[in-house]
Every structure is written in C-alpha cells, then in structure tokens.
Amino acid sequence: MSMRVLREERGASAVLLAMSMIMIMGLVAIAVDLGIGFNERRQDQTAADLGVMAGATEILAGQDTIRDEALAYARSNLPTTFTDEEWATAWLDCVDPDAAGYGLNFVPVNVPTIWNTNGWNPGGVTHLSCINLSSLGYIRLRLPAQTVETNFAKVIGVDHLSTGADAVAKLGPRGRGGILPFALVATASGGDHVCLSSGPTGLAEDPCAGPTSGDFGTLRAPFFGHPELGTTTNCNAAPSGQVLAVNIALGLDHLVVLAPSASSSDEVPDVCFNFGVNALFSDPGFPNEGVEEGLVGPLPGIAPAGTIPRLQDSSNTSIRFGRSLDDYGLWEYIDPNLDGFAVVPEIPTICDYSTFDNTNVAYLSHPTYQADWNSDGIPDQLESWEHVQACLEEFKAGTYPALFTEEIEDSPRFAYTPQFFEVSLSHAQSDPYPIELFRATWIQGSWWKKGSTWSTFHPGEPCDGTCAANQDMVQISGFVLPDLALPADLRGNPPPWANGVNPFLPTLWD
Image 1 (cartoon, rainbow, N blue to C red):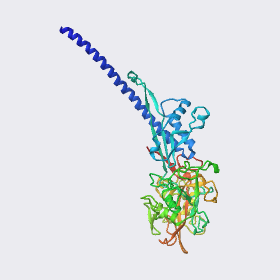
Image 2 (spheres, rainbow, N blue to C red; image 1 turned 45 degrees about the vertical axis):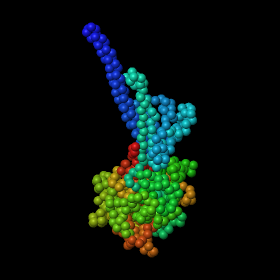
Image 3 (cartoon, rainbow, N blue to C red; image 1 turned 30 degrees about the horizontal axis):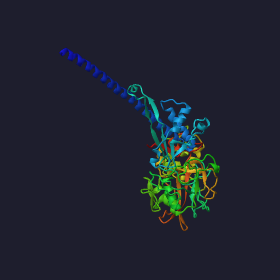
Image 4 (cartoon, rainbow, N blue to C red; image 1 turned 60 degrees about the horizontal axis):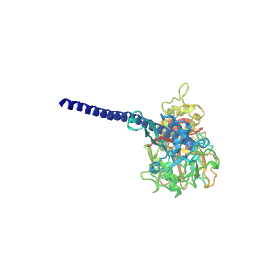
C-alpha cells in the first residue's frame, strides 16, 4: 500500500513540474519579448525626436519642406522597413487625439502631393493628423503605431506588440532679442548703419534723413497669445502704440517666416493664428507710446508682468535721460583673440579689439586709425560708432572668421529684423510687405529732442548734448550685422536661405 501511494505521488509531481515549466516558459517569453518591445519604444522615441527637430530646422523653407524632412528623418531612424506605399498608409491612418490638449493652436500639415499622384491615398485624406504646426512656434510629431512581432510570447497567444512615440519641438529666438517690429528695405546690406525709425520730429542726422510723412519704419503686429512670453491674444494690434511697445520689448510673440517671392499671391498676412505668416503690415507712425516706451519705458499696462524695456534689460548700464540704459558699445563684443596685426591679419586691422581704446595715443596718431572715420570733417573717437562702421565695411569686403563672440546674443541691443523685397516703404498700411530675409541687427543710436534742444546717445560714447530727462526720443538707428561676422549658431548653422540668417533656435520641448 505504501509503495502504491509513492508511485501515485510521483505521478502528481510530474504534472506539477510540467505545469511549472509552462509558467516559467511564459514568464521568459514575456521578459524577452517585453525587452524587444522596450527597445523598439526607445528607437521610436529617437525617430520621433529626430523627425520633429529635422522639421523645425527647416522652418524658413515652408510647410511642405518641414513635413518632408520630418517624415524622412523619422523613417530613416526606425528599425522597421517600409515600402513607400506602406509608409504613406501608416501616416494616413494615424490620428493624434492629444494635439489639441496643448492649447497651442496646432494645425495639421497637408498630405504630400505625390501620395495622391501615386494612388496611395484612396480615401482622399487632405491633412496628416500626426504632424502638426503651431503659429506660436511649435511642431508636434506623433509616430504611427509600430508593430513588433513576438518570438516566445506566441506560446501564450501574444503574436505582436504595438509601440509608438511623440515629440514636440519649440522654435525660440537665437539669443534673447527675438524679431523686432522694424523694417529693413531690400537695399540694406550687412555692415550698413541704417535708420530704423524716425518720428514726426526726427532729425536729418546720419543715417536718418529726418521725418517722413505717413510711415516711420515700424511694423504693426498683433499678439497671438504666447503662453511662455505671457502675452494675451490681441488680434487687432490695438492700441497700436501700446502693442508696438510690447513687441519692441519682447520681440514678436508668434512665428514669422520668409515669403517664397515678392508676389502677393504668396503672401500669408500677419493675422491672428495664420500659420506661416510671411508678410507684415507697416505701422502708422512713431508714437511716443511705442518706440520710446518699448526701448526705455515706461511700458504700457498691457505688457506681461515682469517685462523690462529692451534697453534697460542689461547689466552694463549708465544713467541717460533719467533712465538706466545699456551702455556697452558694439566693439566690446569683438573677439579679442583675433589678431589684426599679424603678418597675415585674421581680421581687418581696424577691427582689432585693441584699436577701440581712446587712451591709446599711438593709435590716435597712427595713419591707419585716422580720427575722422566717416570723412565728414569732424574728428571721431576710437571708441565710436564711426569706427565700428569702418570696421564692418572692411570686414564684409573680405573673407574672415566670425568677428563677434557669442556674448553678443546676451545684449538687449542684439535682435533680428525682417528685410522686405521692396526698396521703400510705400505701401498702404492695409497692404502687407512680404519678407525676403532676416538680418541680425544691433540697435545703435537714439536721438532725443525737447523744443530746439536735442541730444544723441550711442552706447559706449559720451552723450552728445544734455541727455536731460525731459527729452523725447525722436529716432533710432541700427547696424545691419554681416552674417559671417556672427558666431555660427547665431546665423542658424548653416544659414538655410541664401545670404540670410535663421532667427529661430529649435529645441525639444516635450
């Protein structure tokens, strides 16, 4: 009887062992295949990140190029191989229910024309739900679900795993300046000292020619309502002077890109929530509640909390016109390691950092450093805008390394300005100007007037006049910086458009 019981127990043990083996094999299957799934998920996220960043770097090239670059980079970084038709089908079937939840006014991109031409879009889908662009400067990509076939998990009835990933890129400004609401005409080139704006009582003082009736060089742009800048939606850009002041202090709060041509048929006017805005409207004038307030304050009540007037947002200030204003000359950002005195100079000799020194008697008397830089018969100082202009004129005529250090992006005087196809600002204010290029710009001089008394302030130089606190700003000037004078990152490395710079810096945001 005892032997029979033992034989029966041995049989039970075999059953338990068999059941345990099935369980162990199932756990091993899950562990192995989950590992494969997690690896696929990591690769999917890499593909989504690279795809959205590739699209963001092409922001100036237009919506179709953004989409095509995003698709190409995502595809090349996925482990799965697709035929062209399979790839198109995956995206046509993809949906992104989460895009609306960001509150960033995302708009899906158009379906590639070739997908329709090749018959891969039988349902007639017009937009790709899983690639979205925002007028506030964001791009979102959600990968279509990726399928991974299992190996061991088939034993427990799991034939495949599904993975996916998404990413958002943000297009912020290169440097701190953003895009200024001033206009450069087509004839402005790198190295030029230009009049950015001259008011109704402006002065005929180089480079400004005095007041011009009807248009004073400023641009009218609405607020789209940017969550990080703190602006609220204001689609009428009103009151115009107050909105102009905030746009000067912060830079435009929405995405503004290049127009493909000067044709009005290519224009996307600067209207709330338009995507791909590439044409801007002129402003009616140079109101004191506008240019002056945006640059030196006081800012209007519609400015987001904590906003600082542009030229007060500096650690290098001195008191001018009763305000603490940036007082760092452009020459302070010339790279001191560049040798202008070598046998083969790295930069023009007059650009050497050491030559911008009013205490250097040898330079003041040296024939290379004549005191009258602009040949107007009036002696100039070594530390002067006239010296800077002479330097930039020689720099742009040759081939040299970047003249300025990266610290220039920390200056409130550094920003980007739209340049239009037109040679003059003669449009009606209801007719927008298409943008040809963006130019890196340095806000240089400001002119102030009260009655018949007027003063000029150039940073790093003594004030020409009284600089009294009761004067009003009547015009401002700026330098159009040569693209190659900038560190590569401030150009958009490499520049995406002929002879221009890219003012937007893409970063992964989510």
